[in-house]
Image (tube, rainbow, N blue to C red; front, side, top):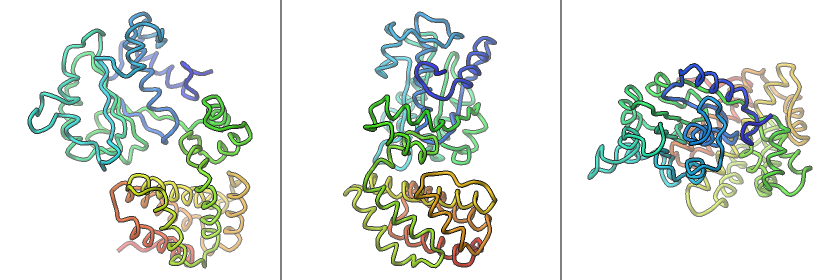
Length: 357
């Protein structure tokens, strides 16, 4: 079954219905789960259900036709506040929460959500990209989260609890979203016209880790071709990291003249490397390797010559995830590529995690 056409999250719908029936809907939620699995779509549909002028809240069954439902769908409802990180910024600007210097506390989400609802019984705010809340932004939100206005609902959307500041985590009810099933990803790719044929959808879904966004990333032919080069490098513990960095850097630069697409491509590459080491961990632990034929072959080759155990593979995985965070923190890309590849090569060559000073 799917709720309002949203795949894979029916158990969460049941939880929200139960809370509404009991009159115990929380004021602040933190939606956590991988990117590209429908968290933002779920949040918007939840807002539509809570603002619908026809159906009851506890039914969570928006009619889709009343003025309120149509305005939420168009993201123009006066009682719906939407905040996300601009593409050219590393963090969500504090001005989106409290207004610019000339309009402090007279504009922004914290001001607007405290106003009386214009037409519905609630004010709802959705903060996308909560992973990019810095300390200043979180502090601006703190009073609103501690003393939420009556009949307000705030939804923050992020990828992991660890990337949220403690002040946010402690004041939110955490809702964990699971990755989608491969079959669901394949269905969405076809039904939404994102790929041309079911066979391609099935192949991409197998690599997607339950994320439609990741599947679409892998549909990039250039990325798919470079993935073969990346896997060939990772499978060999004795591979030359300096030479590979000379290939990886230009490939990242080909993504575009501006920084955001280059950073996005590097995050994709570190994600592919992370998946390689995740599957190597499974093999070293005696578990079956999951993935397409290319990934399985690469992991099998690495397993045959890997000098360490699953702890070393886990250290490589952790280093890839750390590198992704460093990309988001605006690290110099060339330096980051060199340093990360060198660290991975050292772990692969010695079979031991790096010593931390």
